[in-house]
Amino acid sequence: MGEDLKKAFDEAASLVMLKSPFVGSLLYKVRVIASKFPDVAGVDRFGVVYINPDEFMKLSLRGRAFVVAHEVLHAALRHPVRGEKVESPTIFNYAADAIINEALIDDGFSPEGNLKPVRAATFSFVGPEDEIKRWSVEKLYRELMKHIKQGAAGGGGGSGGGCIPVPGTSNGGDSAGGGLAGGDFVTPHDGEVIREGDPKLYDENADENTINDRWRGAVENAQMVAKTAGKEPFGLLREIEAFLKPKLNWRRLLRAAISSGLQKHVSTWKRPSRKHTDFPGYQKYGVRRVHALVDTSGSISEEELRDFLSEVYGAARLSQVVVRAWDAQVYEKIDVKSPSDAKKLTKRMRGGGGTTISPALRATLRELRSGDVVVVFTDGYLFDEDEAQPLFSAVASRAKTIVVTTDREVKAPGWTQIHL
Image 1 (cartoon, one colour):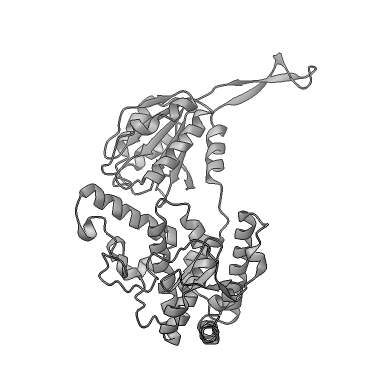
Image 2: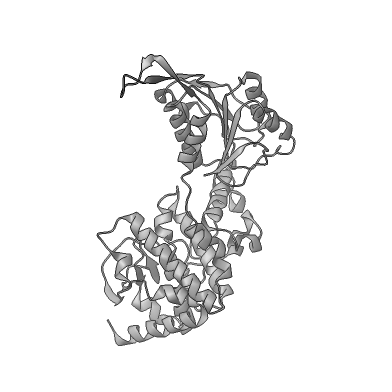
């Protein structure tokens, strides 16, 4: 490794620490490798940062500091790993770029030269710029995917046709994106080590959950350092919260909520205990139905629908399930009596229109029996939310009621809310 590169990197690292104790604290834990593979810089799923020596040396000191800080945040917040769990890792990369770039610019970092980083204003077609700056990466990703799918469904072009205009891409107009626009998640590869980083974060013998916990610990420590220095990263607070906040196992919560309303057990001498014949056994009674109201409107992604139907499958292992797809109207009910029936649901789902829940609630209300369970699966954007309030209340008075949302909370008094 050339001394010039090492000196340039060390100078950039010093400027990063000066501008942001949060990012600077994380930088000294990150492994950095010199490699010509990325356009300018990149990061892999293990949190290894790669710097292209030729392109890096062309940048000013401020430009180098921006690039280093950008990739360090990708690494520490586990963006490549989180991006593997969504439908489009590239769009997730765009979303992550915009959120961290805005935070860096708020902290006084300055992209210079050929760096034309994606920013919140790039995606103003999905929301106000000031709001986007405070979103988590997942939130911006969901909005971008909705835009793409709605545009594709409309068959149009431009910003209304599902295009994502990003600097450094063919539809962004400028080919010199600096490797900071949806293209810096790279595959692991060899190179010359610039900085070893914290070996605990790159322990090949540790499982992924352990590594994720260690990265969370590093982020928490960095946040404490920043608070002590009086330079808390306000632009990243929502993203840090999304990364650090313990994830509730929403599937377990949902299944527990469903099963608790399905059946009761009473002791009976007619069926002796299997373990101890001198004690009574238990008998199930009052098994009820689950009414699954599945939002199939145009704003629901394939990934969301797949998650919804996987929970219908889980419910079918516990009880009889009645499925109703709905968008601006409610479709015919589908009886699911076994998990094998649930597996066939995808081909029978209809929808793609607006999002009006009242018809589905009315249809369900007509068939409710006392003790039934009603589960609504939706992204939370209901055109008739206020008008549907009496129906939500009526259903809740007669059944155990649960709303599973992928985005905003539904205004539904008396209903258990579970966020996916």
